[in-house]
Image 1 (cartoon, helix red, strand yellow):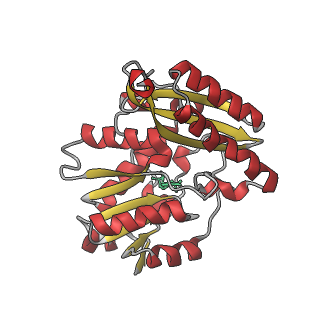
Image 2 (tube, protein in one colour):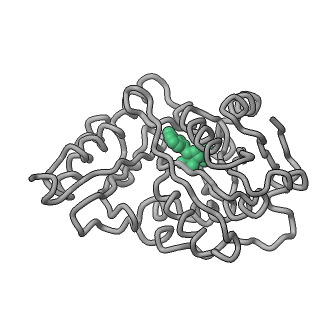
Length: 279
Ligand code: AMP
């Protein structure tokens, strides 16, 4: 496996698969890498802690960086290349800022878009740049960041001429045995905080188990989050494709963002609601 920092060396990897990450690789990332291995050849894993998707006061500076371990783990999971550019390579000083038009799912649901202003502009900027540099045929993203997955899919669809053959592939969230979704930010949690963090997946499971409709499911989530002493940014059930309020009964998505002290966690699950669930 090669570690590449200079995009000039990527030409041999065009047309394969890409798994973009910010490093601090865990079992969730590595599942994406293993899927990447199956859907494209060669397989590039990018590691880049993108400053433009972090807001002021967020954790870009202290974001966990475990590069040597990441390279070993990516190699063991089947990567051919780790692409680890520095900030000046991704954003050459003096180059115009290139942010593709943001699709509605990046601006209207009132979820991550509202709680992290500028976040999806930064995500679209870096993902577009990575697509241009790596030129993958398939790119794998986790459902863990469900709104992000929908944003990237919509961005790629909207820029069909720029990346004509590109396919965005989603992968289900990987969880620890107790239900907590793997996340690089879990590294910040001490014992007690990790116990409280379980409230997030338990809230989603409560929404999934609740067959009383959207409002009841959202109430169940709030109760579970409060019982774990979590501060709630949102706990909602939404249309799984648009993330607008769910109107048609059927498959929807429950999404939570909550804070354990100053550590912000997000998670989501598919839920059924409406008449079908009571039949
Ligand atoms: P990040 O390094 O946090 O930017 O994540 C890189 C990719 O890994 C994104 O597509 C995430 O959605 C995905 N990811 C993060 N955590 C998980 C998880 N627990 N299960 C599946 N995918 C994940």
